[in-house]
Length: 286
Image (tube, rainbow, N blue to C red; front, side, top):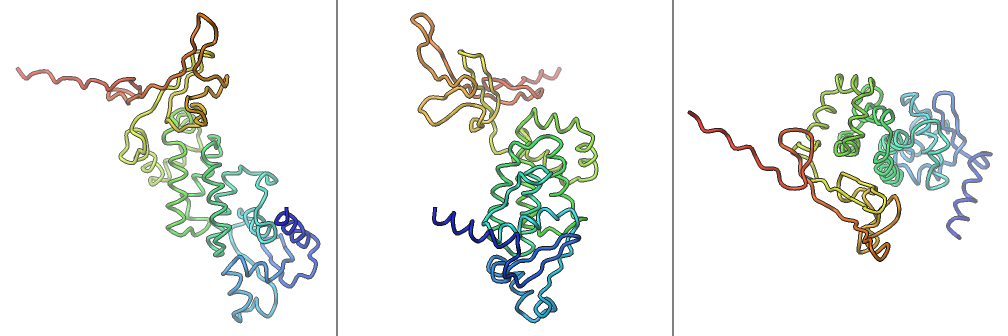
């Protein structure tokens, strides 16, 4: 509670601009902030405000990033005062915003914000919708709007691709959208990464899938064993995510079974097998 009260009291200085000594401008937006807070979080701001640049004397810092990063800049300012930011208040997908904040935090050398935004992005991208995924992928693979360092690109690329490469239904849905198809045509790197991380690619993390079957509600899930939709692992036995039932006796005559079967990709199509498929035997040469 003491920590929460401290953050609350500190954040109250942001909106009215009390006792501020630094003005931050970006496009049409402006913030009255405190130099000590900005410099304590960002090495970039520390240099700009203390090493004798023009901003040192004027007390005004003007950022010149792409206009599309306005919300990310606002999140960075919020982080200075609140040790976090509220992604839900912006009119954009949370995964997209977290990716933008990750890029901005790295550019302005705000390590703690970078770690937070990257963690939030890694979680949000796992459940991103098809259209939102295309926008995030375009941001991660597009270098025309802002310069993204190689190490940030690699992290974003890996998270963007692995989020859908093994989710077959999601990937199929994405490939049906015109925006995603156009993006794949324009970005050979993205198309290649999706292929390499796919179920048959060399970078696939899990060579097999599993079938989760609940005989109580007939719920079936096909996918990686660690997927949240495959059932709870908090108990020794799997629990169905739909009916919340686990293995046990439901009546004197009916025994409920909840089981997991390993599956393997079919070498002849996009299907799966519950046993290792038998490779076709080549016909003998005449």
